[in-house]
Structure formats: C-alpha cells, structure tokens
Image (tube, rainbow, N blue to C red; front, side, top):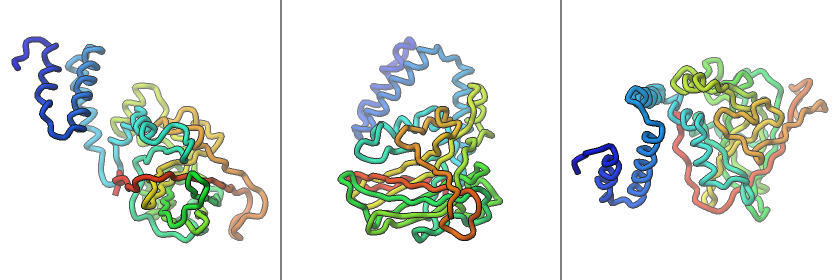
Length: 296
C-alpha cells in the first residue's frame, strides 16, 4: 500500500501484520499499533518529542544490567506494572492475598533459612523485627512445603545489591512452610526509600515534580506446585508515603500490623524497643510459575 496521507499509515501497518500466525501476538500488536498511533494523533506529537521518547527508551536499556533494571522501574513509575498485576490477580484479595509488584530487586537462590532464623547477614542497624507468618488456602487449610522468598531494603533504604556495605544476600531468605503452613524469621524493621533517580526515570520524576519514595515494606514470594504463585508486599502502617507510593503499589489489603513492643523480646541480644509482625497469606489453586528475576 502506497501511503498518501497520515490516515493511511495505521491501516497499512495493520494490514502488514494481519497474517501473523500467533493469534495472541496478532491481537496484542494490532491493538498496540492502533493505540500508539491514536496517541500520536491526540497529542500531535512533534518530531523532537518523538526523538526524546526514543532517547528515553535507549536510556532504559543502557541502565539495565545484572544489578539494576531501569526498564521495570519505568514501568513501575507510570503505574503500568501495578495495572498489569491487578488485571491478572484481582483487585481486593477476596479469595487470596492481594498481589503486588515483584519489583526490580528480586533475586533467585536466596539462602535457605531455617524458620525462626535471622536474614540479617551483615551488621544492619535498626530496630529488630520478628515476623510470624502463616500460609493457607482459601478454605482455611494450611499449605505445607511451600517455597517462600523474603527480601527487603535496609533501614538506610538500599537493597544489598545496591550497597557495597552490605553482605551479599543480606536481608534475603528462602523458607519452607511447616505442616501448619507457618514460617517465621528475624530481621530489622524496613524503612521507606527512594527509587534510583540517576537515570531517565529519575529525570522524568523530576520533570513531573514527583517525589521518588516508596513506603516501607517487606517483599514475599510463595511458590508451590498446584497453586498460583503469589507475589506480594506487606507495608508498614503509618508510613508517610502510603498514599503517594511512587510506583502506585499500595492497596489496602497489603498494609500490615507492625507492632511496636517494649516487653521482653524473643532474643537475648535485643534491648529496648522492637517490632513484631503477624501476617496470614492465602494462595489459590493455579499454575505455579516462577517469574524471571529482574536482576541476577
């Protein structure tokens, strides 16, 4: 088809892709082209703006490596990751624990950790946190033998792969639920932190006059054959950024009950204030598929 006007471009591209054998790829790409072309027409996109957009995408690729995924960060910062998550996992957690973003910092092969043990693997200042968790199905029965990954940022707001001062795999652990579906661990109370702002995502946030902060949270990933893999977060109640999470990841069911304690702690090396967290997670039957880790 010879292009005569701008109105000819969209049908020409759609016609060229019409014979794609994969039906789902054909559907997705046709919709993408229609919406992308409609976007350009709606905002009357200029050539310099198109060039800046291409430079933005190139910048995402340049800053994505084994320890940082700028592309996922960009998806998070415009709410796209949360939207896809909620479209695929429900919005209110009626039958399962509400899902949340995997985030750009999950790693495979976290150290196997006995229930009740610490995931603090190098000196990490901050109030002690003792978490006692239970995993069940949507009929209330415990789920035993499930693989559980736990990870979080340090109280200075950095994951261990970002911070040369932390030991490898600090604040990460892999647990197996017991016959009652329980697992527990010791850590330090998480803190809120800014997402990395040295790249194109940071420049975009600055241009939009948005803050870069995530509220404090723990990450959890549950995996067991016969159950839909559950990826979620448990946020600290009262965090000042709960309602303005830079990646739009907070939903009401994900706000936990981190209790400030002044009584006798569960460990003799803890003095002063400490925190406890009791939380129940629910998995539903489905396909057990581990995601691709965003970093190695």
